[in-house]
Length: 304
Image (tube, rainbow, N blue to C red; front, side, top):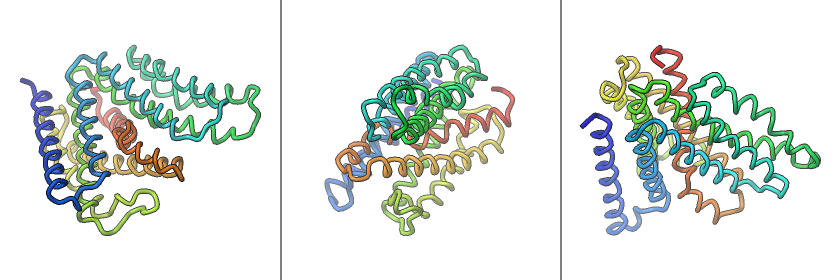
């Protein structure tokens, strides 16, 4: 039994323990249970399913599973935008760019992968919106679509490239990244929920506190240093710095998605509550940690 399977079993046991602990607290101490914690636990289980698909099977299955995740995350993002009928053509082109982006990964064309959405799709998207649609709402329509593609497709697609860039170590590196990203999210949420006093950005996300940030940063860095020998081929410096980097970028990813949801869902309480259980809640931190971690390894280490 290899280290990937053992790690997944341990993660499953750990999540099960958290889940049953929360259910016990909710049953015996109703005042300690809240919908936000329940939504985060669902998101963590969703993340476990995704990482299992991305690491247990071959790289093509991993690519397809992450592509499907990117599609549903983008679809959910578009559902938050107050769009008009003529914006749908723009969304169609955005959806069509997803399989193309992942095709560059499949053929291992890094050069096109890295510029396709930030350059070519970015420059192309205004054209369908301009043709016979006028200028009313142009900037909001195009920029919100481009931003969604950058986060939900371009950012997440880096997860799929690991196994193509380094088949020998890709699954372990993906597992390493997702473990640390999810761990940081868990610790930040639990610490902020039960011990947090000083909110970082109360207008954007009242659940993010300085106490949670510090605890998540320290614990993520410590755990990364402990597990890097089992999941990566890299050195102790990597184990230390990567934990810091993942913790910081995960925090900024979660904060950015929180601000986006607050901005797009102002005045729509029902949809806002529904989004807590959706795909974006699963991938919020990963939209930042995936590209940042990928390029950190690619720049400083020569095996990818």
